[in-house]
Image (cartoon, rainbow, N blue to C red):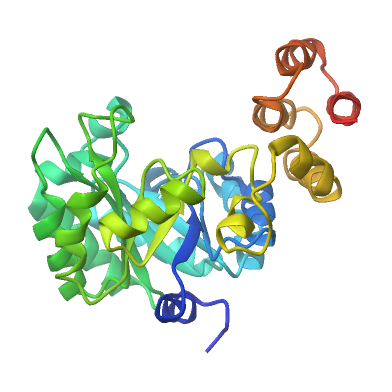
Length: 323
């Protein structure tokens, strides 16, 4: 068995908690996943991939999965509402070299929910179950599900659903500890995950507002989870994975940028390689803004970025900024 396969990774829960990179649209692309796994993320998840776009072989969608066969610790997340299309998309992802397939049942965005996908599946359990059944049947890869606690206040549809999914053969469930109606507001209900976790034999990974050692420990304690999945807490701070794994100190951000300058520059240059000079401008601005966030002079630096149209000039400005 590969030491980077999902089944192998999940066995580590008997020794320590799993710490993984969550999917974030427009952000967890190949270059960012690569640097996060370099910093110790146990695995990463791609940006949400439209199953319809994937089966139509839309070039932009296929580009999102470029090099996924070279990422032995990356799950491909697919989104959709048709069991048949989701199964077909999962098979294409498998053929492209995915390590595992993750089914999105958590995206709360109106555009996705209006298609009957993402969090909308919380209100359509029969369809949700059929999607899992068809995807598990379609591939020879581990299948996982990322879901929210429930739809509205006090609704915890995930509790019954994930038990059904476990019986259908999924290998892991990730639960964002908020309801769909909360979106990203309010406090995640980590405690509500504990009653779900105790009924499962598969690992439950908690998601939502883990940003440092204190929230990491609190989340694991309250949720009784086997690990955490970090999204926005990793933006501009990919070293958070090594910090939580206790392989580096939780030093101030400025100090960490200096300490890991070469790796950060490698990340920035890989963005240019992945997208090409013209298309790299937007993702570079996004990541440079996150790297500079909270540091002295960051507002002025971000203003400079808006006027800079050359990727190499952006990186030069960043090097001057962190001196």
